Image 1 (spheres, rainbow, N blue to C red):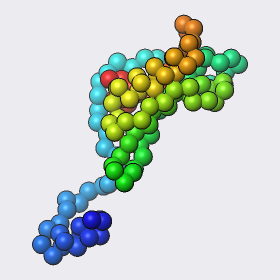
Image 2: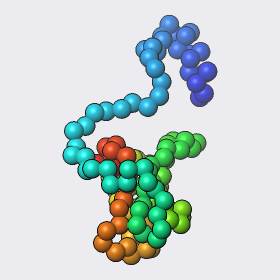
Image 3: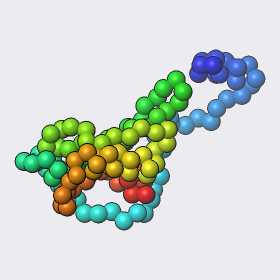
Length: 121
């Protein structure tokens, strides 16, 4: 049943939704935040110096799925990725584990992400 059909059924039943802004909801969390090691300088001269990561949400017919990717800024290649139905710490750690297994980085590799709950959990 599509959104229009749901609204029509609700209207006929004398029901209405709670007005409000649609979109992403944010929550505040007080996890410790590391210092900014990148300072917006993403270009690197060698592989495995800086990896960046993020989670994206994708809508499918079966519902939402989330994709976490770890990207090496030197090669701009996705070194690790994971897809799951929930945006949680396991999603991120699976992508990171794939990147580590694929590249075997030496100590000192910096991994940069936002400070959302998925990354700080």
